[in-house]
Image: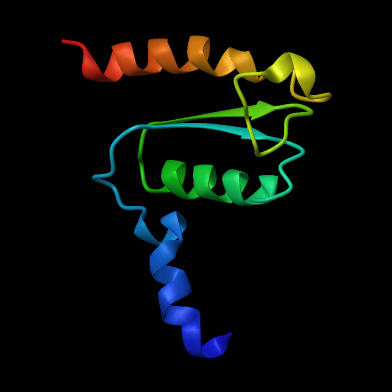
Length: 96
């Protein structure tokens, strides 16, 4: 593992945070079994510390593997809410 530390660092977005980074919308499920929720919290904190505009939306009870067929997956009933979160964010940052 230690021999790949440099490659792992390159793959992690937290090591690429800088003051000129674009705005971020981070929506992360609190039950994410693939990427720990704490990583999203740390990433958000690093962005804010660097002066980057960032929004952080914890999605309570939501897992990592979002799917359009949320009605069939217990615990993922709220994943449809990402669209209404993302659209205003993109309109604000991409539309003149």
